[in-house]
Each structure stands twice: as C-alpha cells, then as structure tokens.
Length: 247
Length: 331
Image 1 (cartoon, chains in turn brown, yellow):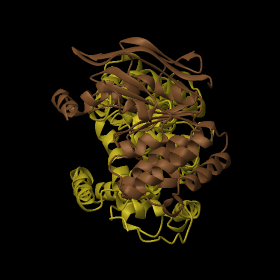
Image 2: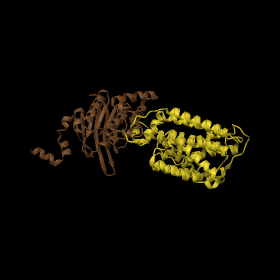
Image 3: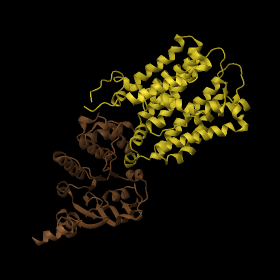
Image 4: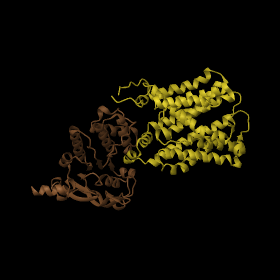
C-alpha cells in the first residue's frame, strides 16, 4: 500500500443544532482515486469544505502528508498541494480561459513566463486550446466545469478534490471527464471525487466512501459497496430495500 | 465572440495618449487651458489609483478623499510650520496615508461588498471631522501656504502654469506605469481573481487579505502624492476641500464613466469630466456650480443603462478588454 496522503480523523461539523458531519474518518493513499458518494444532503460538500479549510470543523483533525491542516486557511492548504474545485462553478467571468488558468499557475511560478508555460500545458491537457481566448462568462457549463478543473490543476496539486464536476454534463462530456481523471491519476495526482453519476464513478474509483446524513456508512471497493445493505437502504429507502429482499 | 483584431497594443495606445497629453498644453498656450490640463492630469491619476483597489481588486472605496487630504495636509503643515520642502512632505504624506490605509482597511476587509463601501465612506467622513476640529492644523479655517519665490525645490511657480503641469504629468505617467505593471503581473491576476470570486481565489492559493492590503497601500500612496501636489498648486487647503465626499465621488464617477478596471477608463473619464467642470465654472462663474455634475450625472446614468462597462466599451476594436466586456453574447 502506498503511503497515506490524507487522513481525516473524526471530523464533526455542525451548524447550530444541525449536524452535517459526524465523526467521519477515512484515509486516502497516494495515487488513489477515492470517491465520496451519498444521497443529497449527506454532508459531502460540507466535508470538502472542512478538509480544504473553508470551514473550521467543530471537532476532529485533518492531516495532509503528515501535517495538521485542520485550522489552516484555504490558500495555505492549496500551497501545500491540496486543491479543490467547487460544485457551483466559480469561473472568473471577466477573464479569458487562459487568464483563468494563468491565475492558478502563478502559485508556483516566479516569473510570468513560467506561469504561461504551465498554463499552456494545462490548456493542452484539458482540451481547452480552441477556447483559450473566450471569456469565462461565455462558456457552456461543460467547459466551465472543465475550466474549474484546469484552474485547480494549474496550481500543481499533489491531491485534487473534485466536487461534482460531472453533474449536468452529457454522455460524451462525462466520458471525457472520466478520461481526464484517469490521465491525472497516471500523472501521479491523487483524486478525491464527489459524484452522483454512478456509471461514471464506479469504473475509475479504487475505493468508494459512502456518506449518509453526515455519517460514513460504508467504505470499500466499488463492487462491494454497491452490494452493501446500508448503502442500498440509504439510496432506495427502507421499504424498497425490504421489497427487493422479498422477490 | 467575433475574433477581435488588435490593431494597436495596449502599450501603444497608452503611449500615444501620454504623448498627446504632453504636447497639448504646448500647442494651446492659454492659461485657462493649462489649468484644465493640470486638473485633468491630477484627476486621471487619482482615478487610476482608485482603479487599482476598486477596478482590479473589486473593493469599492468611497473614502479616497481621506488619502488625498492626508497627502495635502502633511506636505502643507510641514511646509507652513517648518519650511520643509514639499517634496519631502509629499513622500511623508504618502507614507502616512499608506499607514492609515493599512490600519483602517485591515478590519474593513472582513466586510464584503456594500458593507465595505459603506465603511470606507464612514471612515472618510470621520477623518474629515477630525481635521475640522483639529486646532493644530487650523481646523475649519484651513491653511494658506506661504508664497515663496519660484523654484522646483519649494514647488511653487508664479509666472506660468506649465511647470506644474509637467510635474503633475510625470507623476501621472508614473502612476500609469505602476498600474500597467500591476495589471500584467501576478498581482494583477490575483486582484482580478479576488474581484471575480474570493473563494475561487483562495482555493488556488491566493491570500485575499494580503493582496487587497497591497492594492490598498499602493492606491493610497499614489492618491496622497496627488493630494500634496494639489495643495502646492492651489496654495490653500481646508478640510471641506480636500476631505470632501464630493471629491471621493468625483474620482469614483470619472472612473466608472470611463471604464472600471481598465487602464484607459480613468483617462477617458477625466478627459470628459474635468474640462466639463472647469469650463462650466469659467463660463458661469459662481452660478455654474453644479451644472457640470448635472451633465455628468446624466452621462453616468446613460452609461449605466447602455454601456455598463463605461465609455471604453464604445471603442470596440481598440482594446480587446473593451470589446469583450461590451456585454455582447458569446459566439
């Protein structure tokens, strides 16, 4: 087993009386693709926010490559090599595709030339070459999502956390997104993916973690997780689960 | 989007603008015109300074008169009480304004959007009140600067307005160079990212507070320099003149009219507003007060309705920036 990249240790997050995450713990190893799934409102995005520093968790710790990052601000976490994308895309609208990516590339570039070189490389990798001079605001949702990943990649992350980057895409676009994920894995980027689209996520994931109402209910290889009783209950409801047993 | 042909680069257009501004006062040797040109250059530079924090970084400041006033008062007080050269006063004033900007904006940067704008407005007013009731700087009476023989060191010229113009002009060009440098560097991209989405910026490793603070420091420093210069030119200042809200608003409006967040914007805006306000004053005398603002208000309303990105939006082919912010649909 490769070495542990990210360790989430007993994260609990609450908003007033609402418990969004309760004692969640898992580990991500170097070079893995780990998927985080669960019904709407399971607390996936909250967990993302806790890990990447946008929320300060109520309890628990987040360890990234041996360093406690629980209370670090997002920009410092990014500097350490852990970058995320947003479920609701945050395209820099008044900037072109290239400028969007360039902004990310400046993180590890001393000079503008270096940043430009990184940006060009990422544009190529994410197939945005034809659109690089378009304004962020004028892109389609599929391209915005791709740009979201490209901008994050420009910061040269060791680990990338994707929050529903495939939602709203058509079949071809989903395929392209899957290919990109596999390509990134080969390039040595560890991925944590939140996704609803099972047919996209199951084939590429090494491990799947299932959340339901804030708690981790299952973890394992994709083919095992889909057979898990708790998971089926969570997705289909108690009654349907009982019915499926009968016949 | 239609493929835009960039006939001239931004650098070329800016250079031609600067050359034109430099030769205009020589071509038209008229005292009134020279005065208008001095005011134009000063306000274009103020707009440019304000543009860095508001146009680039997206943090709306309605209190820039505070920095302008601090610059004006620092050099004036030092000159009037201790005969310190206005050049030294100018530098000190700029540094003090920068210090005040840091102290004041650090807590304000916790506020977002409108709340930040309101806070800057309030701070501008507070600083004005302090100067109104401050005995040491003559309070509301204001300071009349002692008239000395002409000279570069004491920054006073009585024969001609041209030396004032060229000093203001050199500083104006410096401000443009700084703004250009920022726009094309890492800092410019980071500031624009913060403007578009602070969270997205943080996610790609930008420390928003630090960059906003840098932008504010540079902006206030340059604003204060022109405050000192203005005081030396008019040779009289009082708090209602240099700390006034209308002054802050003038800086805001001319930049918005010209084009927020672009380097051309403040220059175009000042080229419209300043001649308008100075010539109506010359034409109508005391009664002309306000006419310029009526016309200008109308222009701003029209721009807000039809060309939200400012006059620069009209010059499509000039700059890609102008074209692509023109609000047209993609492809």
